[in-house]
Length: 250
Image (cartoon, rainbow, N blue to C red; front, side, top):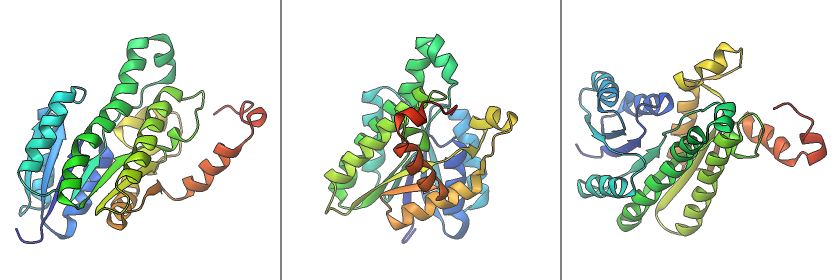
């Protein structure tokens, strides 16, 4: 299909990622490659997207999200099929902080899926984008990565890793045709945050967050807080002096 974008989504069963895909397919067909850990769940997402835009070509890839060799091979196979326009890296899991504190295996899993896995995929695809001289690599971080807080510092530390890695990639690709976009959503209404919603937390609709992400990717924006209000909120939190910050129950 002429002028059809080739889009790769890692963690395609993520609520945010799925809604980004829906937006991309609203007006134009696309070649979508959906990467997931569970083929059945990824197939379900693919089937829904295919109905929304029958002219699109959608394929799924099941792979291990923590095996470096599998990740590298997955990126090589996808790149060999054609030039990639967009890679969206969206996998994650919001583990309870208390569980991370009481069970080191849970803590390890949280750090791996929220931090190590995204940066391994980013590194695996980065070289292929650079060789092509074009493309956008977008990583979903989180406002939680801006400052460690007692309520979610394991998750926040992993997302902080993603942020620093994205900054390094941006520096590496400065002056090239490759764009690296770091996305920092605030709390979003997805299945991952259902427990927060049940506790009365105010969550941004996933459709709004996805729209903000797609806009940021289209612009090649270096850092995008979604919604934008979180840029100011997190600026304040980052700059609070320790003696004030340590009194806050956040």
